Image (cartoon, rainbow, N blue to C red; front, side, top):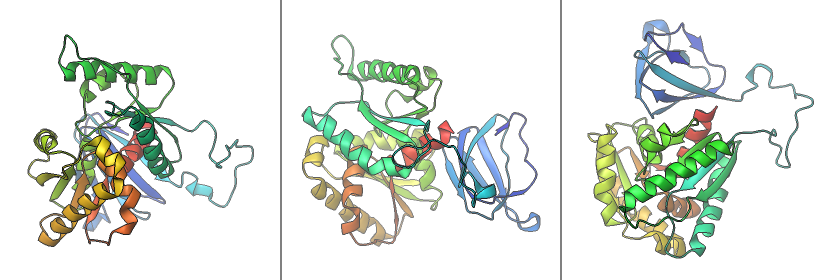
Length: 316
């Protein structure tokens, strides 16, 4: 849905659960009966969820682009099973979208690459009705150029291959969101930045959020990106659990426990309404053991799950 000249649509009452991803511009959603409308503003990269029965007028500033996803897609005739639809062994329609969860680095221990791909696929694949493939960029050397430049080349090459191989969207699986701008320019399919997207979701829970990441060196980088994305005033801070990638994979429960300790402290302080897990490896560890921790009464956002859901929306 595009708004080349701005403005709003006529009112529509959704008969399904609807997710709205702002692909470009700034959206203005007027929600509720005409006499009692309230406005939801969302920036590029934000994700807004509307429950069934919501009356909405879609709109935005000139140039705004929205991607809408509904569930169930067969809301007009939920009682009827479509005859002749081919399905795979899991009961999904064949020809579903393919999403690439692309890790833009390699672990110090090579065996951890495949282990991480396996763990993260098991956790995120059930979140969407699409095929999720977890993989890494090719090994790259930074001889003759700095690490960031070498990584950018590797990421762009991987995204271009994903385009050629028929993928429908790519998630850059690192909260430094490395090479995202270059990858988007080189791609015809959506390229999802987990930190950018998850910050947009966080503010839907309330005006203030915090971020948890892996190592202390990441705190400054993540804080800078949050500010660059326009969420600096909403973010109260970034806290590292003091564990690096290989250590996290070797002791996922220990890493998850460290996350829960920060969550408990932030919940007790009461200054934020949500917490972003700002590291794909930490997110995987915490999600693996989330059920063993008590409900702290605060939204803890798994960026891996949100990124793959955002990719499915953007690819729709």
